[in-house]
Image (tube, rainbow over all chains, first blue to last red; front, side, top):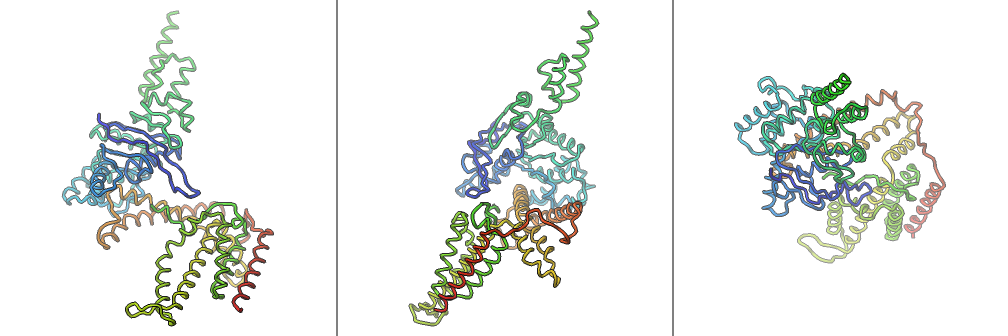
Length: 300
Length: 265
């Protein structure tokens, strides 16, 4: 796995020199590997969205560097600018409440906006729209001419996601992808992200303050607190640090809390069982443990 | 990107100017503007400049921020100065093309520009040291005698409060939408004028939709809290004059007397 996204000593301050001044990032060092699903977790105001916008190249650090495939996103000379733009276009950024950016009369036109801005030919644009709609499970013929404003919240967000996928990003970066969705919309969107990752090997970075989402799909977690990285690693290892997670204003995922509580109540579960990520796996482990216990009682 | 708009932005603090009653500040500002236009002797300008400088120091707002609020005026100042320099008849300094530059024009242009600068600085001082909420409260209080002749003072003040309240929100929203469309490859800074105008559509449509959504939600929230206009409505923070305000009034009256005396001499 190559090093896809690198942040070196990145600091950023909002509105410097005014009473509203606020340092959002303090010397962040972070490497995101190609092909991974990385979650940036943290409380409101921890700097996670700011970090995401740096990766998308929309804001540049006050000090430090943000590199995509080794190219610095902050360009100074004209030559660098072209390279930086090319690097920036590898990153597909999906904003929080992405459905608020829809503006066209039809779903087709809205998804086509991005590819057209990139200067693609109309035939290629059409192919990309068709493909992007298939990837977010929207039927091309049924939906292409409908207004995006007549859809449900979950569908609108999928249209917005398709608008970014049509740009064929190598890195998909999402800010709170499930915020404000109903449980079904949330489930569908998480499944969609996992599918995209499995099918194309797209590197995915997403911000969330929902630890269930993080636990469900991430294979690397970065916990931020007040603009600094507090913890980083595999979800099971990171979430096992209950006190430090609480320090960041977060909680362990419900499944992990349940397994820990069961262990504390005397169910003979192994330490590793607390790291199980799906209800089915957890249920199997609990059933095994209970059977073992009963077996023991019968033997007496 | 859009966060560097300072004109009319409140600068929190606890200076003497911050603590003055907003009604006092409004009335005094009005009086000072009248004085600026009424008394046009160099000595008057000198006194007014000293006063403005004093107020700037008193406000504890960084000078750089205050002077920064003059930025939008820069071209107007230059234009005004050049026009006055070239068109005022009097003793000639030099001849440039078909215009003759005069000493009178030079001094006239200088004083007009000074007047504009002082005007803007004094008004910025008001908005820098008074929160928008207090400002509209003061407006409502000052307009309320006009209710008898049918001026909807409360409604006007409420409209202003809401408008001011949503300026930063809408700016933030615009910033977010611009970034989102930029992430989709939109380009707002290059191309012909027609292309650039067209590139505004992807920002304006989502902005309008969100503004209407917000308006709708706000109306609902206000009705849910039984808002029914200004009739019989009380305020949590009542405006009350303090000794400082009387000092300010007396000071303004004295200033007027001094300026008038200097003007007549």
